[in-house]
Length: 210
Image (cartoon, rainbow, N blue to C red; front, side, top):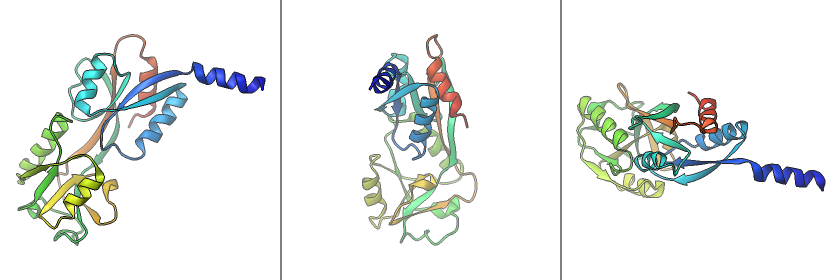
């Protein structure tokens, strides 16, 4: 009993770290972040927030640590990249391009892009569209929510529409194919304030360095 009380007391004394989490993070990242937090002897408390809102909240001291989609406006903040992977084409398994081993940019002519509201992550939004245009594809975009069920319904509607997502976004009814060349990338970073008193946030970020 005495040991149980000691454990409970130690647990209650553990410092908390308020962490902002955006839509679309890779499935392994929360587990990695939690393990890094345990190593740093802090307990993460997660708050849902898109990248641009997180950065504002971080500067207002409402968050201790932000998981942000890059590129982002990180001036005055410390940051560490914790995830980096290529985007590919996510589409219905009956789509005309689904049988390809890889998709060339020219193959996407006539396809709409299922995309998201710029206010969520303006830097990433613009960077990916710029990469598409530089590669010769200037798609009409359809703005949708970050909900996977909604995205699946949009992509399987029978219309000429695709999404640019990481490979882990594939699920029954949808297939993912790599882009043959010059694929844009999905990158996440942890960001925190540089002022004193944020050793725990920095310790977590360093443990997740990629």
